[in-house]
Length: 583
Image (cartoon, rainbow, N blue to C red; front, side, top):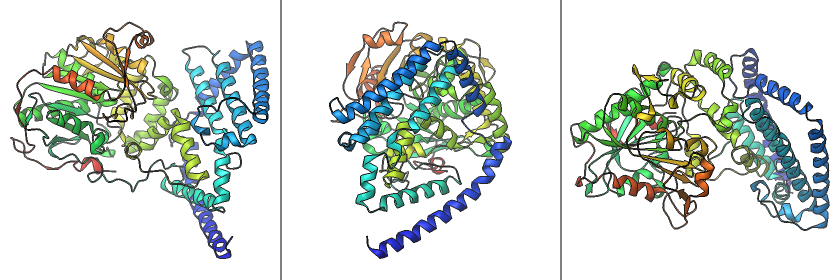
């Protein structure tokens, strides 16, 4: 190695160590605060300990099962090493071990297969725990987190691809990895904020959210964007997009080739879209009800002024879809017929089974959260990011650990991950009510359990045509928990199951690749899995299926294209507006 390079690397190592020590000193105060109970953590050590103690008691009543588990771990582990040295067998379809060196290096192969054997045996063993128990869910979840962390792919000396890169770069990859680690610690002020995207790759309004439009209205919670037409005539009924307020609205308008907004404009729709504010302490008292009144209800009033129309279509995504459903229930209770069709994407209304998110949410955690938000008035955005990442730990945590720190690389430019990192805070009043009334009490599906603006609501009274999209690999809103919507609403429902997950399955534009497909079926048996067995698979995007469905609901003659800012409401600023840029 070049002596000058050694000197330069040594200097940078010393500088990085000094920066690490500085970050550690900054983090000490947070550790003290956490120990004192004033710092919130998504992982509750007390509930995790109680869950494992309960599981231990259960397993002590099954001594034979425990013995069988130990025997299986040993025999499968030994068989894995024997196969590694003798050859044969197929490589596992596990993205952690996709590099060919895991096959070529016998030691690495043995480590890989032995680890996978332990994971499989443990999963089968824990399946004996009582079903439906939150303690069982926590034990399974945190045991998986532990085993995922111990994967040989996560360690420099055990990962053959990382070792090879270390040798090829003469140690530069390790230095670059430590540099990335220090930068992530500094960005998180002592909390490890693993970088999952290139923050310099995109600029909102320049590279993303570029569809032309105007902000025609704003209040303390949202800006309303009306988009410029892309056709000479448009459908009579305008369409309102209601995005989640956990992230920014431009999930609907990423790049032109995967913009759902642009796609629907090209089909001749007049598109309005809500861009939510990024809350501060000033929004602490804003409630779910405020989001409804200042969000979709205010938007409908504005859209009537802007277009002269009195009937509209509406779409909601994730928690935005929950808001849309609750709003429709309120309108139904009041006899308000302004909504002709509704569409929800990746939206649960039945919270009987919330999947692994239930690990983090119960009444005890709700009180801890209440105390944490009392001073600031909001929940910091990184808590939800951490929670969602842990549910897909190998894809969203450990893959970036390997890339950033072991391989010494930077994440590639990827619009979905850029958007995912551009998250927002959540106001205290809204979040606490939502978690208690909708998540824990499952109040949305119970007639009269919830009241909004003084009116009891019942979603079974919603009788407008409803398009419901779920995605098969969704780790946030499990599709089997979205499917019950087909039996809870009062009107005709079209249920479509897309492939992939919560984001990639929704933002799945029509193109030649046809990366993900979808399933449809016209009848809805009670059980979700029964529905899937008889559903028909279609390759490609679900967007045309939805577009054809919504077009069939509006048979009125088209109207001249509507230009934003040309009606009774003048433009405030160009899209994407100022709210979406707030950090």
